[in-house]
Length: 379
Figure (cartoon, rainbow, N blue to C red):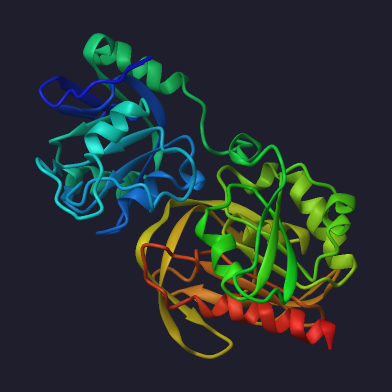
């Protein structure tokens, strides 16, 4: 239950499932909310973070201390609503200042019923999550406040992220088309598992007409648009539950249609090839993650939002039902698989977000690589 009001003077408490609690002030809506506690290391791009469907059912802790300085505008959202289930900041801006700002972040959170908390030691909370791992959490304010034992019991009753099938909750229900900008060169069928608005825009910039299809789309739906390529988007939840997208991707691989996946789409490709997936201790989230493209040796600074990863061998190509596959990208912080590439079919994926509306833009070339696959297939 939430109340859409600015609660900067109302007490609030954040309770983790291991019993640790942080007291602060309400930020955004007043009430209670639950989710998985994760932290994002980006210093900018809070609007893009809040409206990323991949954050569905997660309470996001911002490690940057000052949030809300540029307010909220109507141009930067990645979807039609805020998807985070809760928001945690240390020092919210008292007065936003930006020529595009239309309202404060506090007002936007309140209007959309997003319960948050401010004034807590987010550095201590982040260190706790790094040591103990992402876990369930609740934020409580207003009438939802009670003794900590009662609140802790509520947190421990909340669903876990492992085993959660969420992409259908955030995907479009009806197909729609994003037209090519300028001369149309290709048609792409994009499977919406939680797609961000900037992704089809990046393709449209390259002359691609993008048909965005629901997560429930079938192979017949995909090929009804006569695609030159197929794209699988980012999205929330545990990839181990995504049996339908995996089956759809296998159908696309069977036909050797050029294929590109990002984030959740990378995990779907991993499963389609026969690899396993696993939950990371605290995930990669933010816009400053170092990744090496092993095909070129180049190191990129990249935008991430994932709590699961593909379990694939790093040292040599693997035999799969669709030919040889190799790990194309790897995280330099922890050697987590950040990309896959088929050597015998036109398919590849990355675990991060090359559309990166808030930056950085080191990985934008991946859309050009997708174009090159479609050009090669057409030739």
